[in-house]
Amino acid sequence: MLRPFHFAFPVHDLAAARAFYGGTLGCPEGRSSDQWIDFDLFGHQIVAHLSPAAKPFAHSNPVDGHDVPVPHFGVVLTMADWEALAERVGAAGISFGIEPHVRFAGQVGQQATMFFHDPSGNALEFKAFGDDSQLFAK
Image 1 (cartoon, helix red, strand yellow):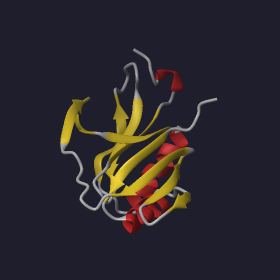
Image 2: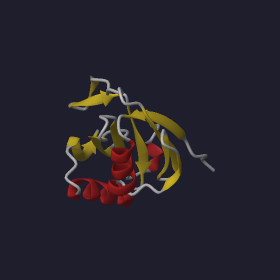
Image 3: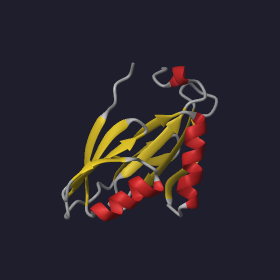
Image 4: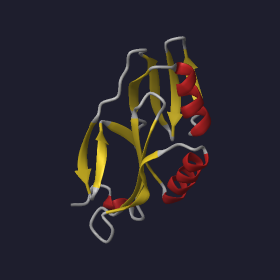
């Protein structure tokens, strides 16, 4: 069984993080304090830590014709969950940095992907494979 991943990241505003991760993305909230909030991101523990001066990195690398922000984080979802999340994010008026699309179409590693940013500028990528064996395929 795959174990949950833990990731802690900076946010400039905990209320905005709570609204985005808990409300917009639908992540159940776990423990919290006045300095951090745990969220359940599709079974993985992410922790938004208050850092009022936090600023996102502004670097990107080209991948299949798009400028992919670095760093970024996210989850590999089932295709149904990916489609539902894309609809939810779009309906919430969140601007996609990279619109939902299929990357590496017809090639090894074909995947559905999308990128967007949280209110603190942290880049997130969510992807799905029609065939999960393609996740690490060369």
